[in-house]
Amino acid sequence: MMNNALLNYPSMIFLVLYLVSLIGVGILGKQKSKENTLNDFYLGGKSFGVGILFLTLYATQYSGNNLIGFAGSAYRNGWFFLVGMTLMLSVIGGYMLYAPKLFRLSQKNDFITVGDFITFRYQSKCLTTIVVIICLTVLAGYILSNLKAIGYIMDYATGGQISFAQGILSMALIMVIYETLGGMRSVAWTDAIQGILLLVTILIIFTVIWTQYGSVLDNQTVLESTKKQFFKTPTMTDIKSWVGTLIMVCFGAAVYPQAIQRIYAAKSKKTLQRSLQLMLVMPFLTTLPIIIIAIIGAAHFPDLDKVTSDEIILLMLSKLNHIAGMQYIITLFVAAAIAAIMSTVDSAMLAIASLFTQDIYQAYRPKTSQRKLIYMGKIFTWVLIAIMAGLAIYLPVTLWWLIQLKLEILCQIAPAVMLGLHLKQLKASSVLYGLTVGVSFTLMYMFTPSLNQPFGLPAGVVGLLLNTLVVNLHHKFIHRYRMEKEQT
Image (cartoon, rainbow, N blue to C red; front, side, top):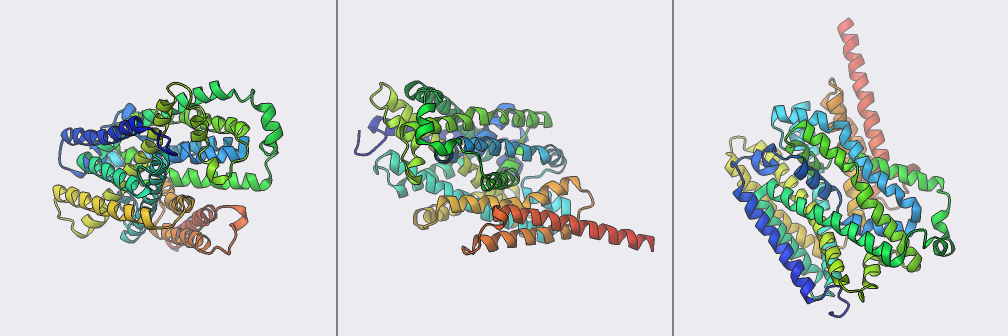
């Protein structure tokens, strides 16, 4: 074992071979391409069955944050963090509010991006441009935060043998190669591999921890004496924080541009519905085991600070390294964490390339051929990932701030999507006013450190409530004005 490294040389070789093998999936995706069109490249020809659609949704939604960030939060908050399961379930609830109806429209009108729906529904170039800019900004931050996470994991797991910068650059290169080779097919197929790896790893680790460290009941007495705060009654501040985060995740994560692409890529409405139904089970197989592992860990390692508590699972596994075969499990954990992050980054890369190609480049060059559009999208992806990798290495921004920015701003487009599907008379002007108010309010709080959270809620949630209120009030005002005008 190398100094301070989780992985020995054979484990590192296995990890490198696994990651490089993903390029082979990209080559296979390219070979299976049926035509050189945006539909085929960015949506896989809208041919995904339940298995692939479910796994790509799963891998996209459950990032490395679930393995590391959720574990750290559960360690610090105890049983209250069971609300983490409701957060993951709320995303499915968000899908249910609009996905089936959006899918039917996408089949009839050949949507590629969320911008296609906005253009079709509102016939407003201004609104489409603003929504696309928001999506591009959020996705860029999404890629940046996850590239930073990959760098930290690679550096930590290899004891610095693969540095922070080298980890970022190597993973970025692998992802951009297989994504630009096979488009959505390559991304979805690698997501399927990474999703299976993530699920299997969590269940194996849960079994090992439960066996070696004891069950929750075995550790109950220790927890009651060392972690009394785990058993306190949630305060009103705790509840408001949970409700605010629940709203933000429900309406933010559910309208990720990459998630909307997967809705479009479903083979049929039945396929989409079954995939979402399967997703309802995953918090119990993914989030719950992670929470239980972290709480058991709190009984054995009670004095970790905020930084080291995020490493609780790795710490628990490393203390069992004397057990035969434990190095394989640690390797599996590191591979699963990296795979989970990659599955979110590659999806964001594909989504941001499609937004640029379909909603920006083609908007100004409407006569461009499909082949040229795909080519330009690939060029854009390579340039983008080079810039993001550079920023991830040198920009001193915390991961949590980037994640927070992502959700608080992204949830502001939820009314445009969800209300637009259900309110037939809703006009672009109403949505524009609401979007302007919601984004302005959110940014004002996020970029003014002296301002506290409004009403104890995330600024993005209050911004979303104001956004929705303005949309509805303006919509009713216009409707009433037209009714009065018709009567006169």
